[in-house]
Amino acid sequence: MNLEEFRNFTIQDYHALFARGELSPSALLEAFFQRIAEVDPLLHAFLFVNRENALEQARRLEKEWKDRDVYPPLWGIPVAVKDNICTLGIPTTCGSRILEGFVPPYNATVIERLERAGAIVIGKTNMDEFAMGSSTENSAFGPTRNPFDLNRVPGGSSGGSAAAVAAFETPVALGSDTGGSVRQPAAFCGIVGLRPTYGRVSRYGLVSFASSLDQIGPMARTVEDAIALFEVISGKDERDSTCAPYPPFSREEIPPQEDIRTMRIGLPREYFSEGVDPRIVKVITAVLRELEKEGLELVEVSLPHTDYALEAYYIVAPSEASSNLARYDGVLYGVRRGGDQGLQDMYFQTRSFGFGPEVKRRILLGTYSLSSGYYDAYYLKGMKVRTLVRRDFEEAFATCHLLVTPVSPVFPFFLGERTENPYEMYLADVFTIPSAMAGVPSIAVNCGYEDGLPVGMQIIAGPFQEGVLFALARFVERMLSLPLPFPKIGPERRS
Ligand code: GLN
Image (cartoon, rainbow, N blue to C red; front, side, top):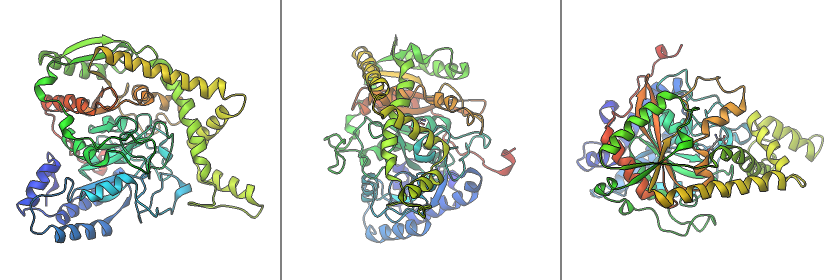
């Protein structure tokens, strides 16, 4: 089977072939496993390939659904899962040595829901350790490469999921987004990535980084497929008290195509400033002109606290991380080191061996800003800034339906280019952090290429307005009708 023939397929298209008996879930899986075998030695998007289990599950589905032609929404569809989402019986490392060898005894809620809808977990994807990073270079197991240029990063922290979808090693994937980790890698790899409203998707079974910010989101080749995944994974969950008590997202919430033309789109001044690569502004501006011709109204708006959001995030997120990561002490999970010298010695040796430098930096930073005497000066101040950032968005949404911005101020950078200076790395997320701090949903969609590298557009909506978000994202996708990626990946592309 030639997988390239499916490059423009959506889940619906696979289902049409299944229904006609022209394709089976096992044959589809085999094709993706073949692609993984060919390209992943160069890309390193996967930390674990779930071959045997997945094929067994496919055969089971085939037996159960033999004489039916109406399928559950994700029936037979392979899904790659970021390695910080717990999968029963399948290793979950979070890209960290400290969880090496950890096999969860339960499934995350999202995995349960995916499987109930007929999806098949094809493997676990590489990530920055504990989702801390923007390039996947912080993985303890080595970086992932960008399918469009193997010398460049795929973004992060969900870089493995993004690269796998872009290289067509899987049709869809899950990522997690704390400050941009779904949207920024999606943009760097030319695919679609959604960060849902905080609380719209259960975090049960997602390894916590910063609990007030973490959200699981779909990553896909088309807006259509992102919607299909989101319908399945969203909705209230008794096991996560921060999960909003609303029913799952339904595509009925998406306004009709004609309504888009009457929408008012805000362009935040702070996101089109000097710091942005002019080639990115050029691509996005061209798309905005097209939208204007279609009848949409564009207005300049201001989100005045944008500059402070990043700084506040790097207080709030490490603070929560320092508390969440206290549980990795060699007692309950993963690796254990030392102990001959007593308990303190075991903690010390386990944590100094198990955590990488970025994780240690955040634990130190977070512990400091939560400590008595500094709490008011740092953490509390950070939370106050967060409120101001949220209000910026509330005010903007009082005058417009959606906001459009670049996802990232820069193109995918070279491996090693930003690893020396953590602050440089943090800046890769300046445009994705504010909306995460505000808890509002946003989506990255590819809107063109420049010098062979994808450029992502970010659309931001008010809380629980994913329907409107999808409407514009789909409109842009249809208007541009860019070919879906099927990059040639071979050793000749690596210098
Ligand atoms: N790059 C940001 C960080 O390092 C965001 C990461 C994320 O969203 N998980 O914290």
